[in-house]
Amino acid sequence: MIIFPAIDIRGGKAVRLYKGDFSQETVFGDPVEMASRWEAAGGQFLHLVDLDGARAGKSINLDVVKKIIEKVNIPVELGGGIRTLENIQQVLDMGVKRVILGSVAAKNPELVKEACIQYKDRIVVGIDAKDGIVAVDGWEASGNVQAVVLAREMAQAGVERIIYTDISRDGTMEGVNVQSTAELARDSGIKVIASGGVKSIDDIKALLPYAKDGIEGVIVGKSIYSGTLDLSEAVMVASEGV
Image (cartoon, rainbow, N blue to C red; front, side):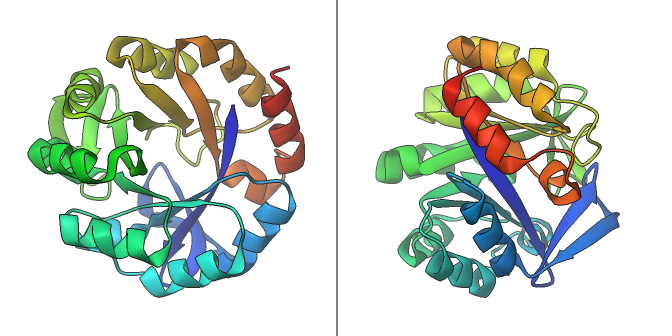
């Protein structure tokens, strides 16, 4: 199982939100320094989110993303406001390994299908949900569709990998929604990366038995910034499967 250290970027700074609420923000400093820190701790793949882009509907913090790519030697995935084929091409040309399509997956599945044809497994769909219902536009609106239904549609569109975030737990460190994530993986038949609520090594261990169901990784954010989870230990436990 892969551990993805998260760096959420807003106003050029690394921040964390509580349940996706932009008014409940904690600033952690320079995103480039954070990227180096997580790489040094054993991070295998960086998960970057352009929070300003998520609200604007287009990439905003690409200058910061470029600096991170130039600084680290591990792959980077990026989400937040990427909603056109041109924007996808732009960020891939910068050196981003995988592009995360969020709101556009619910609003324009045909674009996702075309993106998968062109870029194959470099396209990941982010499904963010609260009480099983997809949220869009920086989590500020309902997508009016069930997460499991959207996941099945994305599988049919050619998507190979989904990031599933339980918004009600994101930034709360109240524990991963293991059962819902596993169910989504089983029902959609594609790989799923868990996100939201990780607090400690116990959350990593709780996910490991469900690798067989299709959970291939987990995103860690507030827990590694606050120190309740040691990234090096998480990577070791996840790689050994114990």
